[in-house]
Length: 248
Image (cartoon, rainbow, N blue to C red):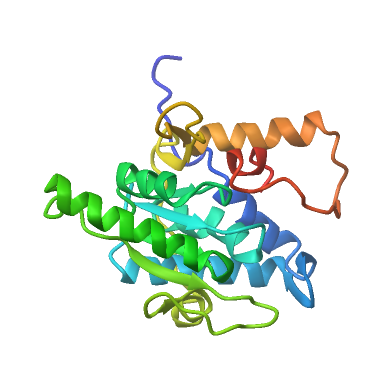
């Protein structure tokens, strides 16, 4: 019994990425997301996630790099829960109710490489980035940490053309490779998400989720809430709050 090593036949690292892949394979033609007049199937969602992961890799985002996002509950935020780890990176969802100073603190502490911003929060993000730049110049850390790349998430239902820099979410999805093979998760202890407290009495504090932890939390919630097969439900909990309790 001591000579039974782990192999592909008896072991696989636990990661939520496999849940999306299976949904695409088994329920590919079923509706995955409904947002205003937008409808996606599980096959389309999986392809969009692979496309974005491919574009992130082309931006030199790799293993354990942090990708931050400031957005409400929209399809892009859902997709990034899969596409970011598919690129080997770590997702940092930022509370949209925080002020610019707190957001700047999170961007600095997490060393975010890319910062996605929903069009509604461009003014807030602009202020946070200005504070971050000033802080880096004052502290003299500008050579050690560079400013993150910024990409706006325009309204997918009714585009507004609001921009903050040259990158835009849907363009990155469109430009990505639909056949992208995501990064293999060799260690289920690898980080998948980085979340921050609101910093009520001091600066925000970070908490790291692992692939294994997120996977097991997801399964426990399905059991705990007695979700039936093929459920359809209205999403209301902010996905910036503990990654939506990992329901996402």
